[in-house]
Image 1 (tube, rainbow, N blue to C red):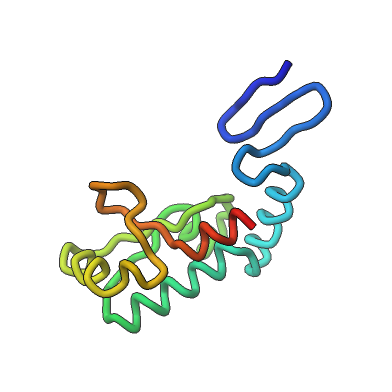
Image 2 (cartoon, rainbow, N blue to C red):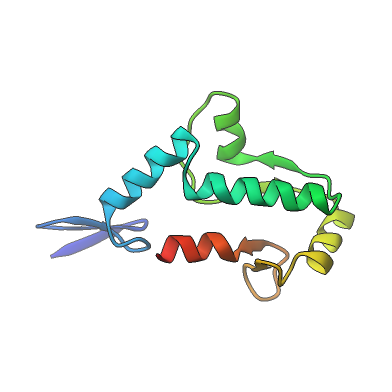
Length: 120
């Protein structure tokens, strides 16, 4: 007998994360994130560099912004706000360069490199 709560799967013998396969790896990645050396930190560095290099103004929000201000919250994504012009530039200049639309028909974007690191 097992039950699922969010991405966690609980059974009599173990607890796993259906995205990473191991709850221990999830906790280890969380620890790396809070230490500033996790996969999400690498993705943030890359994203910020790409936005700056393409002169796209942005604001980081959400859990990543909270952590920068001393309020640690674990997250698996990076939330940013860009202007409409910035979003158009992002799609024109960065889609296909390691970024892809997160969902067909949506304006949100995912980092293919981060997705690859999550699956490895």
